[in-house]
Image (cartoon, rainbow, N blue to C red; front, side, top):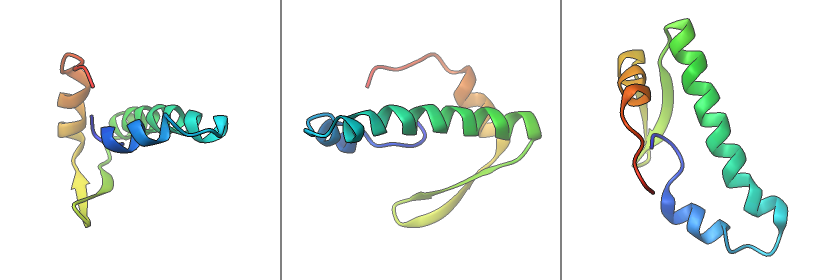
Length: 72
Protein backbone atom coordinates (compact mmCIF):
# COMPACT_ATOMS: atom_id res chain seq x y z
CA UNK A 1 0.00 0.00 0.00
CA UNK A 2 1.15 3.50 -0.70
CA UNK A 3 1.08 5.15 2.70
CA UNK A 4 1.05 3.84 6.23
CA UNK A 5 3.62 1.21 7.14
CA UNK A 6 2.51 -2.11 8.65
CA UNK A 7 5.00 -1.96 11.50
CA UNK A 8 3.46 1.27 12.75
CA UNK A 9 -0.08 -0.11 12.50
CA UNK A 10 0.92 -3.18 14.53
CA UNK A 11 2.28 -0.98 17.32
CA UNK A 12 -0.71 1.37 17.29
CA UNK A 13 -3.21 -1.50 17.20
CA UNK A 14 -2.04 -2.47 20.71
CA UNK A 15 -2.51 1.02 22.17
CA UNK A 16 -4.79 1.38 25.20
CA UNK A 17 -6.31 4.61 23.88
CA UNK A 18 -9.19 3.77 21.48
CA UNK A 19 -8.70 7.03 19.56
CA UNK A 20 -5.10 6.05 18.87
CA UNK A 21 -6.12 2.55 17.77
CA UNK A 22 -8.68 4.02 15.37
CA UNK A 23 -6.21 6.57 13.98
CA UNK A 24 -4.67 4.00 11.62
CA UNK A 25 -8.10 3.30 10.12
CA UNK A 26 -8.66 7.02 9.58
CA UNK A 27 -5.22 7.40 7.98
CA UNK A 28 -5.89 4.55 5.57
CA UNK A 29 -9.29 6.02 4.66
CA UNK A 30 -7.69 9.45 4.11
CA UNK A 31 -5.01 7.95 1.85
CA UNK A 32 -7.68 6.26 -0.28
CA UNK A 33 -9.62 9.51 -0.62
CA UNK A 34 -6.42 11.43 -1.46
CA UNK A 35 -5.55 8.93 -4.22
CA UNK A 36 -9.08 9.06 -5.64
CA UNK A 37 -9.04 12.87 -5.63
CA UNK A 38 -5.61 12.96 -7.30
CA UNK A 39 -6.80 10.57 -10.01
CA UNK A 40 -9.99 12.58 -10.62
CA UNK A 41 -8.05 15.84 -10.91
CA UNK A 42 -5.06 14.39 -12.79
CA UNK A 43 -2.56 15.50 -10.16
CA UNK A 44 0.35 13.80 -8.43
CA UNK A 45 0.64 13.07 -4.73
CA UNK A 46 3.74 14.15 -2.82
CA UNK A 47 4.79 11.93 0.08
CA UNK A 48 7.91 11.06 2.07
CA UNK A 49 9.77 7.81 1.40
CA UNK A 50 13.00 7.03 3.22
CA UNK A 51 13.15 10.63 4.45
CA UNK A 52 12.92 12.14 0.96
CA UNK A 53 10.06 13.94 -0.78
CA UNK A 54 8.74 11.79 -3.61
CA UNK A 55 6.16 12.75 -6.24
CA UNK A 56 3.85 9.88 -7.20
CA UNK A 57 2.47 10.58 -10.68
CA UNK A 58 -1.20 10.02 -11.40
CA UNK A 59 -0.32 7.14 -13.77
CA UNK A 60 1.22 5.22 -10.87
CA UNK A 61 -1.81 5.94 -8.70
CA UNK A 62 -4.11 4.55 -11.40
CA UNK A 63 -1.98 1.39 -11.71
CA UNK A 64 -2.05 0.96 -7.92
CA UNK A 65 -5.85 1.36 -7.76
CA UNK A 66 -6.28 -1.22 -10.56
CA UNK A 67 -3.97 -3.79 -8.94
CA UNK A 68 -5.57 -6.68 -7.05
CA UNK A 69 -5.57 -6.18 -3.25
CA UNK A 70 -2.74 -7.72 -1.25
CA UNK A 71 -2.79 -9.05 2.31
CA UNK A 72 -1.02 -6.96 4.93
